[in-house]
Length: 327
Image (cartoon, rainbow, N blue to C red; front, top):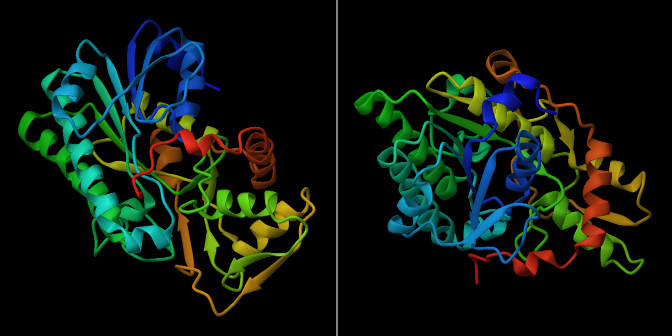
């Protein structure tokens, strides 16, 4: 929930949210609706949001980006391309090229139109491979997600160049971890771990689902509402010409994740130890976010998974109305 000072900060402001029909975007929209601001969402998804103006448009079109940022006060640039590790490897250009284009376009359009404040949502994939991720190591080595990771870093550097050349200090950056929740990408062909598991469970017909790896891989899972609140707080407090991590700050093994799902969903499963399970550990240090933007994630893994599962059962085919960059 937003405190009274932050709510007042957004009241009557004109807000643009790119990717506003996505998982994180929708959570940001729902929180901001309570502040009496005027919200415009933009995406290529054929999805409607109640009490919110939505435009279907392509952020790779620079003229379109200039048009939608005109007369806007604040921009939340959340639009991205979400897909599985397998898709990232097989179709790298489908990630890299669009990401570069709409990041460059929306950031430059915002600068030209003198946007008062902007938050750019980057990714944990912009870090080099490691176990615990801290902001001070943010530009060391090659991004572990390689192509999408480089695209995210390039946008961060674009913002840094604005600070150096134009003395802009009103652009903030956040790097979220493995975010999940209602509105996630449940397309079985390119979904991340949690929506992929839920899709398998819903369609298992009583048969054991197969899970790649031995279950020992550790991930940092953050619920979308917690991350959305962090993004809004980053807009309000600013990230001091750098970026902050947004995550739960806790590591859960895939085995723990499956067991948590199994605690409220009846299904059978078996691990496939011979199949790849990705990086062994990816957990974020969130101490800096707690310090400078008052970030306090409080949704337990079980509660977040239950809310996500209930939403998915009611919206199991929504992914068909979302833009698919991998066709």
